[in-house]
Image (cartoon, one colour):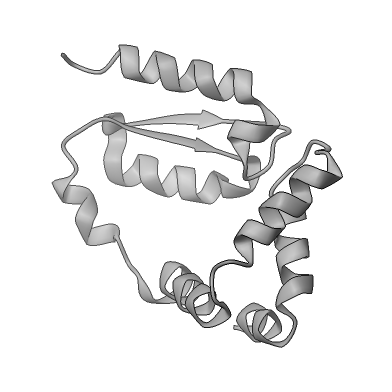
Length: 127
């Protein structure tokens, strides 16, 4: 994994690239710097292990059969394949909510829509 190698070689640069890529809408520089500094609080070896486990070593597909509660998957357009996969695995148990024009940090790029989607999802949960 080339990215984890780059992360180990120049953590500051990769953290900056990573944080800035989370947003599609402009954010104040002091906010970006704050998120970046928080990201850097995680030790590099821990960050690499977490990323490796998330991307390469963890397969959750066998867990889908045990999900018996409604699931909300809010996502940016780049994650459409993930949304399609979840829909195929979970069917009516998953509600997909695509955020066009927003980045990974949906709750920052469009907090009004994000909160509305969460509120509507929670209100429709079985009592």
